[in-house]
Structure formats: C-alpha cells, structure tokens
Image (cartoon, rainbow, N blue to C red; front, side, top):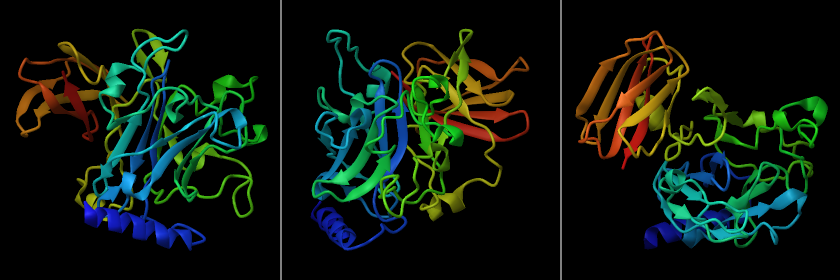
Length: 331
C-alpha cells in the first residue's frame, strides 16, 4: 500500500506542474450511466500498468448541477479504492429507500458497484444536464464530462446547429439523459480544460469521445436506459498488452442481457446481429450450456442451470462467425 501511495502522490505532484496531462498516466471517466429513477453510476478507468490508490491521491468526483459553476449544490465524493492496472472503479448512487418523490437506485446496478455514494446531495444524483468532474482535493482537473457552467436543457447532443445542447424543445436528441455512454477506446486521458475556456473547444461535443450503448426492444418497448452489462471493464488503447492478446476475429457485434445480475432462472440475450449459438461458461472455464438458437433471430432466452451461481460468462456466436462475450452475475 505504501508503494501505491507514493506512486499516486508523485504522479500528481508531476501533474501540478504540467500544462497537459500525458496519455495513459492518470485515471479518467470511462463509462457514464444515466438510468431511470436514481440508477446513476460512473466508472473510473486506470490506464496505467500500476495500481492507483484513489484515496491516497485525494481523487474526488464532483457534480456541477444545472449550469452551476461550483459543486456546492451538486456535491462531491471522495473516491476510496485502489484501481488495479488497466482496471476500473465503479461508484453508484447509494439510495436504497424511497424518500418523498426520490426513488432508490436499482439493486442490480448497486450490486455492480465498488463504492456506493453518500446521501443527497451527492454526485451520483446527476441528470443529463449536470456536468461531472474527476479532480483532486487540491483542484487539479483529471477529467470533465459535460461543460461546467452550461445548462444544456435536457442534455447535450451531437447536433451542431443546436450548439450541441437540446434545450427543452429538442429533449429527444439528448445523448446524456436516459443513456449509458462508453468512452471510445482511442481516448487515453481525460478532458482537463472546460469547453469554452482558452485552448479548449467551444462546446461539449459528446460524440467526439463517447459512444452510446444502443437501445433495444424489451417486451415490445424500446429501452435506452438501464443498460449496464459493460460495467467493470474498459477497452482502451493504453492497454497494448490487452489489445495484442485479443482474438483476430473481428469484434463487430454486441450483446446485452436482462436482468444482469440474474435473479431467476431466465436471462434474455439481445444481440446486434442474428444469434447462432450461445454458451454459458463459469468462472473456472467450464462450459455449462452450449445451445444453438432454433430461430433466425437476434435474441435468445437462456435457461440457467442451478449450478450457475456467482460469476459466469455468456459467449455468443453470431451468424457471420463473430463472437461477443459478456459477464453475467447469477444470484
């Protein structure tokens, strides 16, 4: 622990004298979950080959709500964990009971957390129009999501003619409300200059560094929010070892699973292409299920055996031969 503490502080001392953070040197926000009710969460990624002690380095998550230029109303939270090399740290809204009109976060999302946030006001009470920062207690900015000091209405969007904000009129164009966003693999460091400040782009153009997790059909309804089965790992070009070890088969398609964690005997798998075969593999690498999809469809209902408890992996082969794998927690 002492080694991690020294590494983190020396890194931040170096940062204090730098005009720009260098690639692959300090943690940044890698996933943003703006779900229904208070199902909100943020994933932090460590792009280095050394453990990073968030508490020792004094790293905080701060919220700048509704265009505020301070985090006084939005709240700040000290992050407490040690992120392994090329690993992640997930902080999720910690509310478990209904308080007035404020409803709790989904327990399935909370189960994926490394840290639950403190009661309101706290950063994970954000909506799509709140800016977030990852920074040190001494004020060094490691990353910015959104634009501090700007209220975009419902949220930020990718439409240049709207100056990348929705206002209230174009609410359906928001990328940052009722969505899960994942940082693009080529992003190797956080945004340290607030949009609109000298040397920075004028606007927060969310599509330049972030991808949206596609919505899917569930029980006949189109769902964009509450998709978080990618939490807990992040693909980044900083991890060259991980990139070199990836299989040569192109990873063109994705899968999403509901519910995850699974609490009963069935899991719905939705793919972005026709699903041909499904495997369920436990943490020991044993194949518990291998089934062909009897229908020419992009979805499949997986019946879980009683032996599938704890951490498992769902491996899907699509019609074109490509493969996608996701973690599945069975409770």
